[in-house]
Image (cartoon, helix red, strand yellow):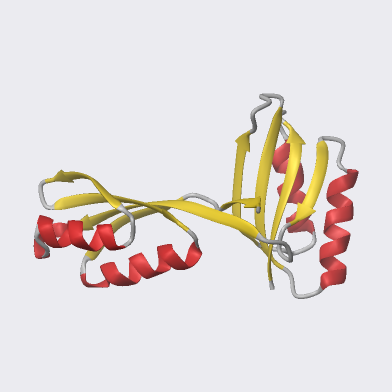
Length: 157
């Protein structure tokens, strides 16, 4: 089961390495990781998506995170209501699609075309995992030249 965990941490060098090391030492793959400064520049918020099949092991990881000096708090949002979003930038070969058709497609997904350069278009979309996946499926007929995704961010309702 995928778990969405957030941690408030001191905004210091090495914190990310210590936290990711904790996950790798227990053979957990981090599916998504997003880190950013909060309204307080001395504190960062990490949103970590991890696939953990055993609740006991996940509880152990949360306890280990709490033990790290730079960690202020840890919370598992998985069983609570929360919003999650990620940003994706997609460069497509738009030679097989008119600008009008591409705009119609992006409007359907609340995405936008950032630029046209020759036969390439750059699309920006923000949404949850399913919305991003649906957009990528809809673009299936076009050649995707480059794709960049951020880690997911989440906030409790």
